[in-house]
Length: 384
Image: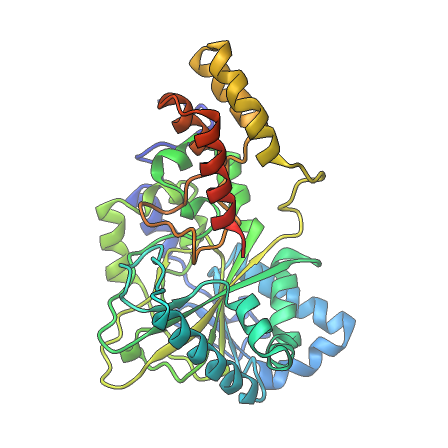
């Protein structure tokens, strides 16, 4: 079959995945690691922390981390990323207060890859911690280790976001998946992006998890499939049953201690594990860090453009392709960033966009006033 530069539903075959994941992480490939466990390099920051204060040594450390995340196993563990766990305990207490308030208010947003209500989730835990306890936020995120690993993959000026996940005993595992950006789109949408954008997506973000408690295997730490980020069509493949079966058979888990951090390439096949413990409330702060390059050059009031364009499109009677192109030039066609507390992905992986709303309103022949009201409601849902 001729390759037209796009992936399809059959891309990322089991044979490709099996061959790629047959690799082993050799100790010589990660000379700065303290050890390699189950193909995952483990770095002792108790010994490496001082190196981050020296510019040359810091670049050497970051270069090795970047190789691991890109061409290597795709995942690494930073033991003792927090030399002092007091900031973690302080943040955990703040997060518990936030969880209690949100539950009392009837909150509890949907998860991307697990059923709603299966755990306690704090969307935008970054902002909520900062407003709840600014001093505690400074002590928690004022961590040169976390900053260095983010810069290793994304370069300077990266943007931090975070979501707390608290999985209680009995909490079920997530399904295997890849992460934001393309991992948070349906297979149909992902297939519309050319293959080179599939290759770009993983270098736009970095995934991390800070352990807020000790996480033995029975508590369900993240399941990981080392090297799987290298499967070219993986954003199409992870939903297929044979890929999910391979993941279940070959994924690994590493126990973590409070203050450890796990970072991985967002294209790595992974899933939160099942908490089969009797008494461990597994809390992790999930970091999703974005490249500085993921923003447009100009600030555009797209809501104002949509209000002006909607009645014009109703009167012009353009063809479907012409209408879609006009909408695409004016309206926001991407679901993110948004406020996942008020704009959750209840019916899929991503909330409705301005472009989707306008397309629906035109198809249903809404009045401009009805469209304006719906657009204002959408904008309100997206605001933090």
